[in-house]
Amino acid sequence: MTETAWDRLCEYEFAFRILSVLVFALGVLTLFSFPYIERGTAEYTVATYNLLVITAFILVILAVRANCR
Image 1 (cartoon, one colour):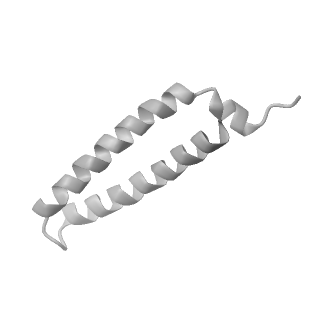
Image 2 (tube, rainbow, N blue to C red):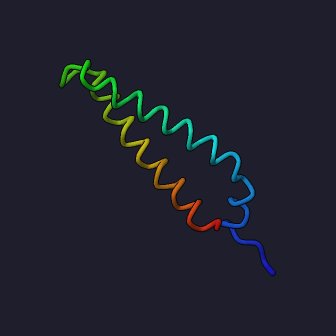
């Protein structure tokens, strides 16, 4: 039987669990900082892109979890 890329990714399940916790913490901190950031500032732009990156990580984590069951 040949090994696929998903099989190799599934070997790193512990790393994805750690990544899940870190992404969740970063997302919570980012969402809590939005009321204190003025719209149009550089900090607002960074926080917005931060949420975009967090969303991408969540999609990758969910894809790995769905295919590794």
